[in-house]
Image: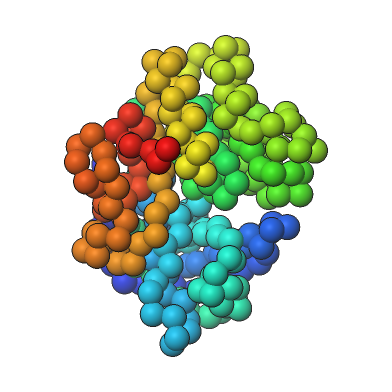
Length: 257
């Protein structure tokens, strides 16, 4: 499928609300163009409506519905905290779609998400039309509340982990992956979350000879590959997360030690 070229879009905010106990927000924007053509794993660069904040904020596309896109973000810095003040009916400017998404070339997919990294996998799960399983984890039951709701009836099986054991299996998400793989056969793993988790999942996938794709997150300014601020080292040389990614084949990535 040929992906649409990125463009500057003035969208209208349809819904904006806090959905998570740890400052997680859902932003629903009507972009007045076909959002269904966007690939799972792509992202947008959103201009925060504040004259003092010049750089756009990169946010993964969590879901699409007709001409609307769903963004899920955490308010942790000046820009995203200012973004929380945007109200329904406001106009926001985005540059979209950006980057390369996931390659859905498999029959038995397993999605693995950690924390806010669970959000970009929502659209991917829907594109697999109910045949994907997901292994997802958060720190505790309160933080797992929104992912459980988002993944209701869009996956074949939801395997939940929490660090403290307050919901689902106790412990870090990656440590439960070997048991999941022992119970069911998968031909590809898609992962998004903290880098340490993605590194562990990539290593386990390699040990089991299972293809794996990771969605990376790096600080970026332009989102177009011009500023070089999100460059990483790979087996194919230096690559830009915003332009060559954010999705990469896991075995091509040199993760930080």
